[in-house]
Amino acid sequence: MTTCPVDTDSDVLRVQRTARTAALTLGFRKAEADELAIAASELATNILKYATRGLISFWVVDDPDRGIGMCIAARDQGPAFRDFSLALRDGFDDKGPIPPEALLARRGLGTGLGAVKRFTHHVEHEALDGQGKEIRALRFLKRMKK
Amino acid sequence: MSTTPSGIPILRLWNRLLITLQGEITDKMAERLSEEVLTMIHRQQTHGLIIDVTEVLTLDSHLCFVLSQLASAAKLMGCPTVLSGMSAHTAQTLETMGIRLRELKTSQSAETALELLGVEVRLHETMTTDVLHNASPIAGMEVDGIDLLGGAERWRR
Image (tube, rainbow over all chains, first blue to last red; front, side, top):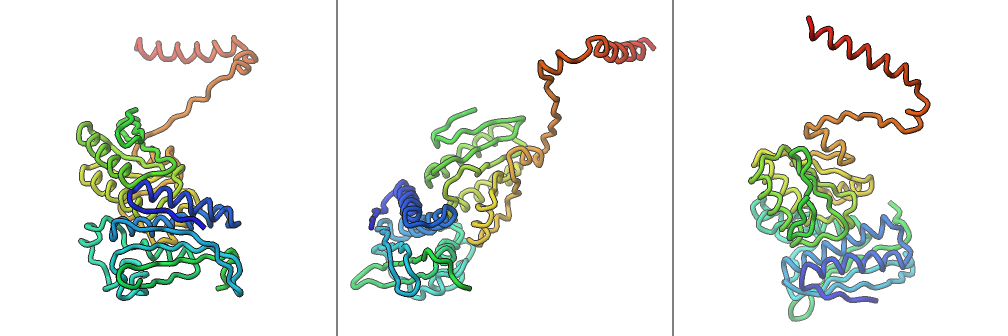
């Protein structure tokens, strides 16, 4: 659908804008589009912080069971996560709990990926051949049954 | 009001600083803003800082971090911070994101934020021309007259 390069902090704004527009075009409500913009923003900020540069792309998905949805894919050359499910927890990275002083040095709250997880229905991580990784976050138009 | 290199206007009201964040905020803007605000607090005694987020499009965890850092630094300089303009949706979003802003007091509007920071507001009802026109001038003078006389008499004693 659309791809945004992420290299500077104004690119993060473009990612937010693109996510919001794409979500509204797909038929998400405004509040949902705002949440998807935050999820995309978190992924873009992570690229800037830990991999310097990368790409965020937006895709329409059509799942036979879940229907239409939006996929935000974040790809960069940074090291892949050792334990992605651990990193999805608030205050954790892929090695475990993040100590407070490390949080300060990273200039973050340690909740970015946690936010991505909560604002989407499915998040997956793939280590790419050679070097790098891709994180894909999916949200479907239909509300999730809890 | 000073418009600063961050491009975000900072308003000084009764020695409280009011920052209205609007639209899209880049990381650099937020960090420059923090420096500017802290310099202003350092230069001139400031009794409070209000950050209004009503018009912010995307309040992500990074912006939250920068704002809470600003609040912590301001607190160290003796200046409390109130975050105002939390819409129901923003509040829910922050809650969903697991963000707890411990350093920050919050309020629904910039008005209540000023009150929290010790600004006492007394509203004087403005008389419309209509009211003035319909009011009996004699009655008005009598009221004024009694008050004035009373005051004058007290003064004489």
